Amino acid sequence: MGPKAVRHYAPLIQETVRRSFAVFDAFAESGRSWNAYQYMVKLASETIGKVILGQNFGHLVNADAPFHPIPLSILTMFQLNKRVASRGAWYQNLPFGDPKKLRETHKLCYALIEGIVSDIETSDTAMPKMPMAEAALKASNLVEYLIKGTDEKGETFPRSMIVPNIVMLTSAGFTTTASLLSWLIYSVTEHPGNQERLLQELLNNGVSETTEWSVDLVSKLSFLDKFVKETQRLHNPAFQPARTAKTDVIVPGGYRLKADSVVVCALHSLHTNPNHWHDPSQFDPDRWDTAEVKGRHRGTYLPFATGPRGCIGFNFALLEAKIIFSELMYRYEFIRDGSENVQYDPEFQLVRPLNLYVSVRRRTNLSMK
Ligand code: HEM
Image 1 (cartoon, rainbow, N blue to C red):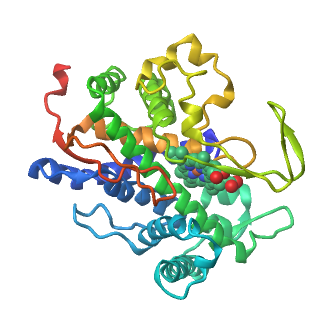
Image 2: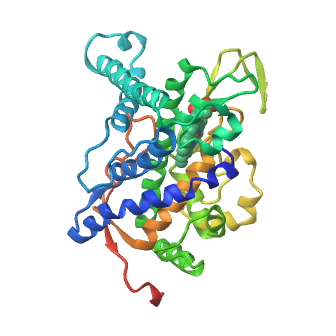
């Protein structure tokens, strides 16, 4: 998804986050604290559900709305995948316990997505088949685009590949951005002064309750950009992309890898390597203005990995996180509940905060700023 393609989604992201105010206003009124990751999952999956599947998951109706079975099954798979895979091949085939639950959840998730694909396929109101470029503009979601868009030979995307790809995209599309949004909330509550700076930048750029969000507006928010980068430097949702060498190869530094070697890149170590980052554990959004950081080696910061198998959704992810976070910052002040260390979830495939609880206060009197 290139920067031009994602422009199209700004109104949908804006509409989704504004729907979530029903939930967060209720929290503000009651003073109840809530688990940041859980509610950011509800919010982020609502956006992805619309973009990819054309579904409204119903998460934002009220604060206690239950999780839809699709995101719930994906979250369960993310939890069980790591637990099962880390115990060796013999364990994966056990006919009981977590391995069995993982197989059942996998089956359920595929069946639910298959149901949506079949419904769109057989719907009387779905658009007719048309060339991909036209379908990209007319399709109301990604599934419809894959079913109806044709290539130069008049062929559509192979049917058997639609469900696995949609499961992968839906999973990659909300578990990650929910984590980034949670870490953004963590960063504002943990580092005093940043909420005020973010809010001031929104006001300086004329943001109000009725702002129509666009890529152009987002790109003017330079402090927000630095804040997001600094949060991803220290708390990136993805932490260890792996690559397999296809042939024997000597990599920079003179290390020889045999074919089939797996190289795991520890992103957090890269992002906090003291040879490249001054005072690396310090949260300092302004470091992104320094000559040291501007002139850094391009391999020192890879939150979305890189190369042909790098993240295809990073433009969308950043647009989504920046619009949602700005809307939340404009409307609420965030307060951390509790002061214990935030725990990373060791059994999840991504880095997410397990025990980050926050409450919100509605902002008033913004004109005084
Ligand atoms: C903050 C949010 C995100 C982060 C930090 C992130 C990070 C990454 C990373 C590090 C990889 C490489 C993984 C590996 O090789 O093991 C990756 C791959 C991928 N990402 Fe993202 N991602 C984010 C959001 C998204 C979104 C919103 C989408 C889709 C809408 C998406 C779709 C994908 C897909 C499909 C791949 C696999 C690409 C391939 O294998 O060719 N990601 N992402």
